[in-house]
Length: 119
Figure: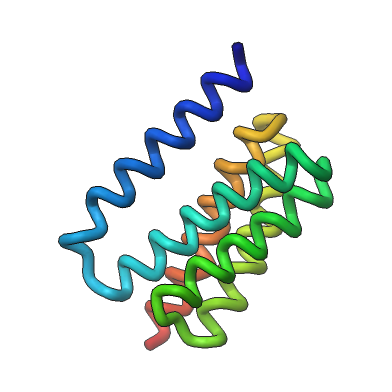
C-alpha cells in the first residue's frame, strides 16, 4: 500500500507540473523538466537497482529533462549532479522508491535553478 501511494502521488505531481508548464517562462520550464526527470529517474532507478540505481537514474533523468528544454551544458550537469545526490539522500531519509523520487526532484530542480539564476 505504501508503494502504491508513493507511485500515485508521484504521478499526480507529474500531471500537475505538466499542466502548469503552459504559463511558465522557459527558465522555469527547464527547472521543472529537470525536477520531473529527477523524480522519475530516481524512482525507477531505485526500483531496478537500489541506492546506486536511484542515483544514476535520477542523474540521467534530470540531465535529459534539462537538456530537452534547451538547457545549457552547465545547467544539465548541475541538475544531474543535484538529482543524483538528492535521490540517494531522499532514499535514506524517506526510504523506498518514493523517497528516491522526492530527493531526485528536489535535487534536480535545485541544480537547474542555481545555474538558471547565474544567467
